[in-house]
Structures are given as structure tokens and as C-alpha cells.
Length: 219
View 1 (spheres, rainbow, N blue to C red):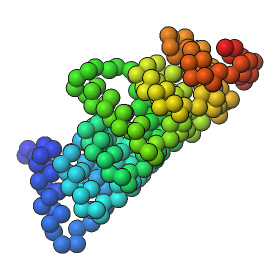
View 2: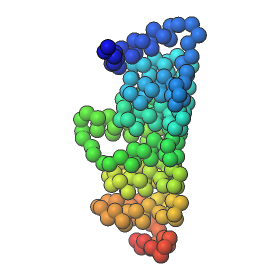
View 3: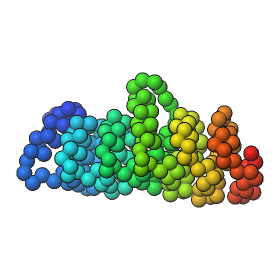
View 4: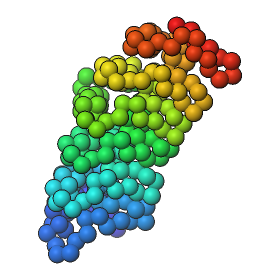
């Protein structure tokens, strides 16, 4: 027979009905330790997520078997309207790390820079501005390799996010990754416009910084 595939509105209505039942566990997990909120976040079910968070009982920072939180899931799948809704909840951990020790800011830096002024691109830009404005955000948060958002923005030629990061005035371009490389090394390799001048523009140039394997970046 045919399988029912509910849309976002219908899922919200079902969640609302279930929340009215006695003894419901809002953090019930499936085999991948995904809660209703984690699933709603990954699929962009805005109404369902809002209802779950509104109960005050859903653990907004619960991680699934892969280490992902609702915020990480929503942003990774491009559900930025829902991600902004989660950010509005003051208890969200904006620096939580998921797969590969990557926080949401690193995941966004790794995305290839394709931006538009309308549609999903606009939502993503608004989300990043809201994320960077969060009082708890760590601009220099590292992944498992010690690479920061600014390093990944350079590697992936993510010019828009790079500019947003620099505008915060909090980027530490002198931080080195696990291989001893600074942002200046990646900027030199990238060689594209403003990115190549990163240390000079931020006023934190490192002169004759010795990179591993004999590589040296001179500014």
C-alpha cells in the first residue's frame, strides 16, 4: 500500500497531539540516539521543534550517536530558519562539537562559498550573523585538527564568512593547527585577494613564521 509521508505542518500537528498525552518522554531516543528534536532539526520541521523546545523539557543540547546536537543538525542540513529559532533559546551550546570534533562554525566555514541575496543563501547569511553575535560564541574554536573557522574559511575560499569573522575583531590568526600551520600559511596557499593579506589586514602579522617541513611565510 501507499506510505504516508507527512509534511512539516502535519508533523507539527502530530507532535502537538502527542505532547498532550500523559507521561510522554520528549527526549525518547531511536537506535541512533536521536530525539524528536534532533530529527525535527535535521528535517527542518520548524513547528515541531518550536513545540518541543517550548515544553521546557526537551534537552536542546542532547547529542545523538554521532555527537550531533539539534543546532549542528539543522545547520548542516541547511535548515537555517530552524537553526535561528534554536539560537534564540539562550541555553543552546553554540560551540558544541559533533563529527570530527567540528562545531557549527567550522562546518559552515567548510561549505563552498555560494551565496545569493534571496532564498536559502539569505537565510544562511542571517544565521551566521546571529551565530557570531552570540555572547558565548568562540570565534577561534578548533576542530580535532586544531583548525579554526578562519583557517577553514581560507581553505574553502569562503570569502563571505571570512569577512564576517574578521569583522568581529576577535580572530586570532596566530593560532597554529596540529601541524604547526597558521592562518597565514593557508592564506598564502590560497592566494586570492583579501584572503592572502589576512595577517596584514588584521594587524597581527607574523614575520618569518617558521612552518613545518621548512615552509616559511614572510609578510
